[in-house]
Length: 287
Image 1 (cartoon, rainbow, N blue to C red):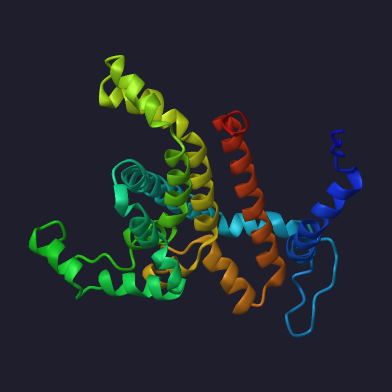
Image 2: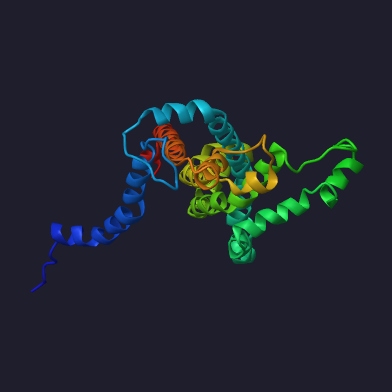
């Protein structure tokens, strides 16, 4: 007589979710509530004497009015870097998934190899590459793509280049995961129906890889928006991002209320953009 399998109870499901819920509560919800409370302190206090909780919501308006240019600059830099990562990452992920053959594993290891090195060290390497006396700048000056006194370091180009390099693996891996799952017989069927390679790509490959595109762009854009290492090491005072200003307000100026308010504003803007993007991209249908 066959044994009937018992469906897991609701209590079991809650117990399975509990560790993740506790983790999120300790390391996300509680810190966010603490940051939200900090953003409404009375700025008349100081990091030494302490702050009074006055529920001062004006801190948000003041932080936005004073530092909106940093927010806009961060979104622009992150958007450009995400677009460049998508172009470069898609080409590389496509090559690994469809053309690499027995070299596929080695290429994937090379993609994740930068993670074996510190984020700071990788960014400092770009500072050497783009230095005024570096080989890259000299080469650009030799072929007249840069004037004799031109430079790349401490420019928006350097900041975006650093962001693109550091976050490129976050784009490649989701794209590869989506492209790898595509049934090659669908591509062959498209060719049998006399579709040109370009038509096959836009009608078959691209739509089937959209989950990876959405995931990769989110994994790239979100951390790039709040990054401050690249702007600090590769940029100048005119290329600072919002992360740099938050860091200065917290550590040097000791202006915790406005630093907290600016952090909350950045979080709200990013979450709003992500929700809008997910809704427009139709992620639920894609997945």
